[in-house]
Amino acid sequence: MASLRGMQQPELSKKLFKIIKTENHAIGAYESASRERISIASQLSDWGEATGDDSISDISDKLGVLLSELGEQEDVFAQNLEDHRSILKQIRNTESSVHPSREHKARIADEIAKLKYKDPQSPKIVLLEQELVRAEAQNLVAEAQLTNITRQKLKEAYDIHFAATIERGEKQIMLARHGRRLLNLLDDTPVVPGDTRPAFEHAAQARQILIDAEEDLREWTPNMEPISSSANETGSSLMPHQAGTAATSVGGPGEEPSTAAEGSTAGTVEAPGHRDVSGSSTVEQPEATSSYPA
Image: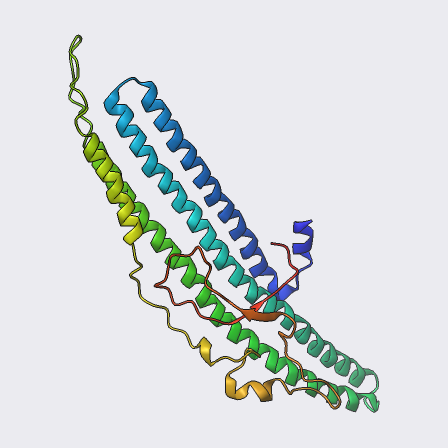
């Protein structure tokens, strides 16, 4: 049914709908990679113990801990991508709300053209032209709202995406370096038949490497260029504060003030609790709600 609903999207929002849907598949892949990496880490530890070699058992167990944490970072990244995806949905919802305004204006213009061709003297032409003026004014507001929300939310969404990518990359690099330190504790000097390898003497060093890795993750802080934004100059109508009143008053005689995004935006965007990318400059804007499928 999800694919069927996708076919019913307004033309204006179809491309972004597809991006959001594909992004969901990518998120699922990262979540799957996380689970598989954690499973592999556990299997590596079990295998090392089964070898009967104390050195390999100790090192493989601690490598498993690091690999498991690498898997956890994939899951955190997937969660951040979900936040990024939810912000893209706000652009899609606004596109969908603007589409009827465009169609209404085009339909009136088409009716006028047909009527002028069939009956140039028809009194209905004047009424339609007045209605077209109102439709054009309302569409002008809708288009301004669309361009405002598109620019702001595009920056916000990919601010989260790239900040999460940096976080994942830097943390995985730290873990990988500690993994290489562990490998250096394993003596791979060849032995001849009958020789006995010396007992593993680096257990304390191996434990310290895990402690170092844990401390590095805990002390990690983002160090990235902030993303500038003028979103705080936008009012609840998705228009600049000084233009908000005028923008929402467009309409014909006796009509209630309206905006293109009315009913599609509410609340504010809050930084997700699981995000650890405080260096990013996530902007706050009205959050679009929708009945679209995830």
